[in-house]
Length: 383
Ligand SMILES: *Cc1c(COP(=O)(O)O)cnc(C)c1O
Image (cartoon, rainbow, N blue to C red; front, side, top):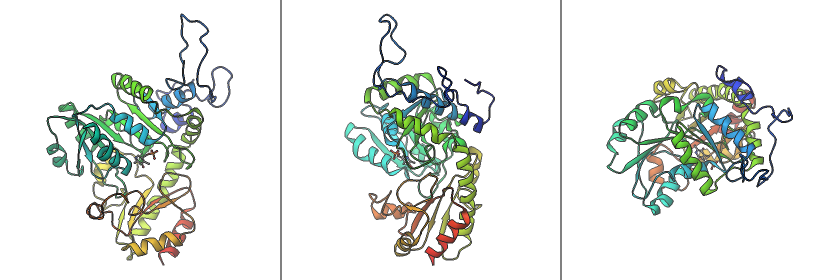
């Protein structure tokens, strides 16, 4: 409906093009709960003919995320992993991938246990070290997979440096933008080819929908990802597409509020002598902070901190009263996770420790509660 080209982010979030139903004026996108569509005229097949291949509700969401990320085309998948695994299907047997070593656990599992069977091989590197990235390239390298800030220690990768190098060598770049969202970080503007999201997290924002979103930087990739989405059938249903759009409208308000609280939480944790280490890109001493500030507009709402021991971390988890103690992040309610026993449980202990994920590490995804209450609650739990 509206002309978006000159609008700022929050305006785009609300007036994204399909916010008013063109047929009836309804104030939200209708849920087209239909698997197939009548052919009124056999000679002119309808725009949508079968919901796996296209559905107007899902299409509205796909156009929405493409606009927010500044890409040419968006795609909605049944989960973040469905989006990520479908993107990897762009590769062929014999190809090699360079991937950040502290990639999301599910992506690590996909690369090391499933794609290996298809003869797609991966080298994991510390992407804070650009020379290590460059050195990992082989004759058959086809793609580079980035995630910044990484999970859970929020390591920063220089996106523009890697995309410039990747372009020189004709490598496809993919970036998992789940932690930042397009409100804080727009990787396509920095040269990334494919942006991926677990929309289950900040984009959905309410811990009530599982979804993945993909945005591509050009039409030819758009055609190829469309073929994969349709061919693999990894699409998002229309109820969930609608729910996700509903959540996304408040993305800016949620991200801003949670970030403000996350900064206070990170400062408070840093001031405590009984916390060994605090990881948050907004802290003055956070490694890579300058690079992060160059490529992002904010620091996000995830703070990790080391309580010193596994015993103490478990005590905190059993004593907190406000946050959900759970896997996942990016919701209206705060979520406290224990990487050693949750997201990174499948990683061998030595590898985990080597990557800074000690037994005492906790990850706090800051929600929309009053920060004073969150701090008071965490303080009594730490005591
Ligand atoms: C949760 C998550 C995923 C996987 O998404 P699902 O929606 O759970 O499939 C991928 N990447 C990151 C960074 C995540 O946090």
